[in-house]
Image (cartoon, rainbow, N blue to C red; front, side, top):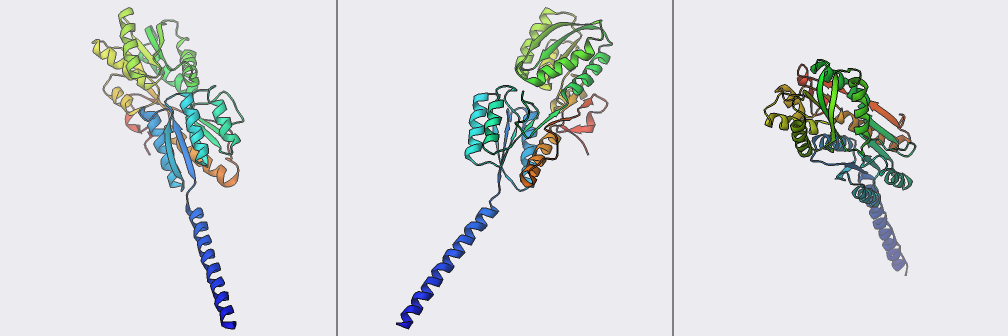
Length: 319
């Protein structure tokens, strides 16, 4: 009987030991499973958005996070679905280049209410106190910089056209205001056309062809981003004309166009720096409960001309 009790006691001990080993194994598995950081951008086809997505993902992985990168294609409905996917995946944080200043407010609020902090890059929303950070290039400063160079290239006079970005995008509005804070101080500079090409190279090509036909003697084109500026440059080249063109973003293709004389200037948005800052602040918040920074943050842009194109690469200044 004593021997049976001992067998029973030994069996119980072995069962408890096995359970404890299993529990420890599960705990270790949970401890080693990395937290998920979700990066959501408008598109990965656009080199600017691809660069910021890649920079954010790389930085998050360096800090030990699992990463998922999604694209909403500037569609707020798609963005809502991607935010819901992040919630369902129990993401630790969201890095978001949003789909609209107004239409994104509810999505960001929903994520925050679910306990998933949002860190916005590139584009602000029309609300504060919801996102943990909104980190943007200084679009006004950049627009004024490139407008000053455009005035210089135009010798302060002549007829020019403007290609505007997506009308619902706050950045498009800020850049246009920044352009005109400088351009309108030169009374001999006359804007003869202004059309939105919705950030699109193909649309900018078509719109520029129409503008050139309607405005013989056009001297310059200033565009709200490099993609549109490149579309304009292609249309100008196709027409066999020489027209001064300025853009905004500092894309590799724009830098190449400046080197070969198809464009004269752009300003570089530090996409890599902004994306890394957002991830660093998300990591700091998750570890300490604070980013240590104000919600609204701006990062200065750099003027790029033929004289300094070699100083920049991949939407950042070379080290």
